[in-house]
Length: 264
Image 1 (cartoon, rainbow, N blue to C red):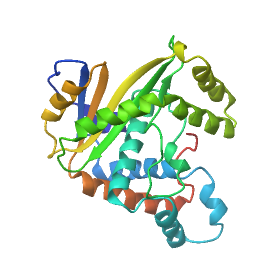
Image 2: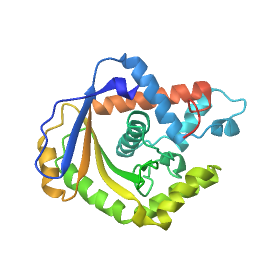
Image 3: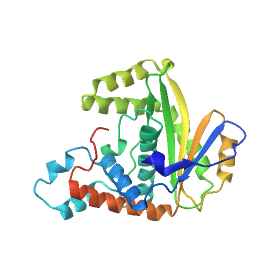
């Protein structure tokens, strides 16, 4: 779905250490179908398989929707936008770029309107030697804000400095789910950090009309190590995200599983 929806645009590479890619709507997917598919992706990031069945055995869709609004989906716009950016990033790395994304971090929120601490998304290529860890810093913006470049750079530096904490969190969650193979692979990256390669990634989910290329230049002036930057441009981003979350309430209330498939 993402591979059909988002297509690469022609861009001019900046000087320096930033490798830049811009993605935008290809027009190949019907918008209603796109919203429906993204709604299920949003829901499965917050709700584990079978979770709603524990809470709502014989209750109807309105009760489920109310539960989601209060306990799962953030009501604050800035938090919802940030969550959506992380969800879209995880799906892009997992479904299109074919990285291993072992956990859906938003499932472990205790408070809907607070961000989960640690790295936004962790993605791995375990079969490469040495194994590769991609650390994407995600920023979502519905309006133009040149400060996003500096903010992303500083945030990425912080999470890289505490990367072991995020890997340990992912390892513990995999162990909780009985995914011993993944837990052991993550444990090996903790035990011997010198045997892993770390890639610096940034992903901006941005309103298409508000995006300006000078942000790439500002970022390239800050970055001193090779960094992959992906910008996903979405028309009328704030309204788009609102539609996706409304559709997620409807879809989850209808099937009560909150997921398609089930495995993270």
